[in-house]
Image 1 (cartoon, rainbow, N blue to C red):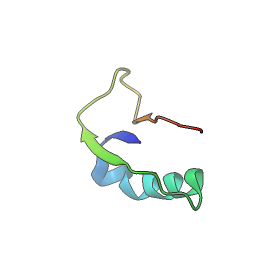
Image 2 (tube, rainbow, N blue to C red):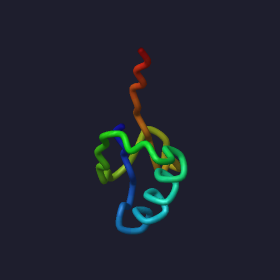
Image 3 (cartoon, rainbow, N blue to C red):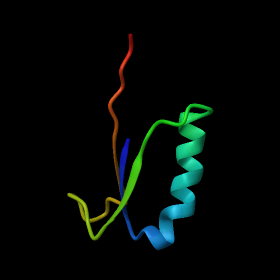
Image 4 (cartoon, rainbow, N blue to C red):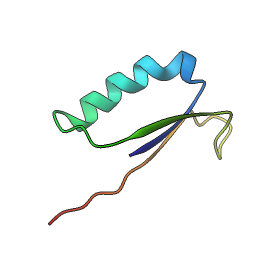
Length: 54
């Protein structure tokens, strides 16, 4: 998973809580990157994930 987060100093803790709640006991490899902005001005977070079954 790749997580792009605006203002990580302010939103990091909330992001971690939501991430753990969403993925449960499974902890996929991930990277969190602080960014100065995203595609939409009001957007705070972007998450990219690849799922593989099989």
